Length: 209
Image (tube, rainbow, N blue to C red; front, side, top):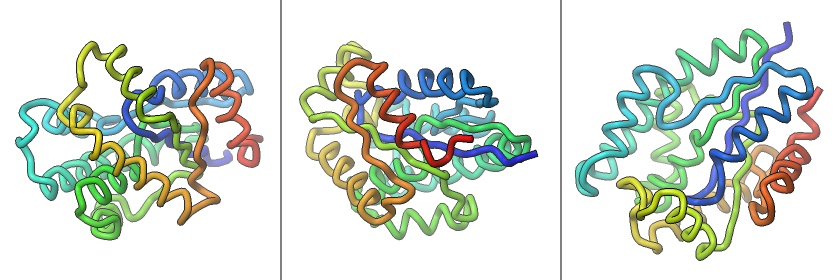
């Protein structure tokens, strides 16, 4: 049995990741592939418990270092309990966020350093990375409007951080794409959802059977 492929969708707040994960899963299933949709933080019982700790409560609940450790712990459980078994069974795994979110949010925007955060991943998840990471991109004003329309407010304790923080997140994603152009692809998320899904499929063309 051929091993499945692991695809992560990334991007800032309001770029349409959740919508596109579902649409991309349907498109891949239409091609005869078995697909599992997951998310981070979360994706396994232990990681979902950590998700509540990370996303709920006051902004100052965790220091940047504690936050990075919690994300790394959740990811380690997600990889071991959900992702790796599915891939071994030949299933394609699509996740709404993975390592690159930690590198952009905690490494770049929270100024912990991308390599410091990557070291946590090397320990917790043995430096396991997706076959392809697709980073959805929108102008800041449009993404912010989408996020407010979706949530009815500024969002969770991470999503509600100031524009300067989210600009640094975007810079972090761009840095990853520049460093690993074969794995990390920037995708224009403007236009209607079907058009964006088509762009995602095009960016996966070399991986599709």
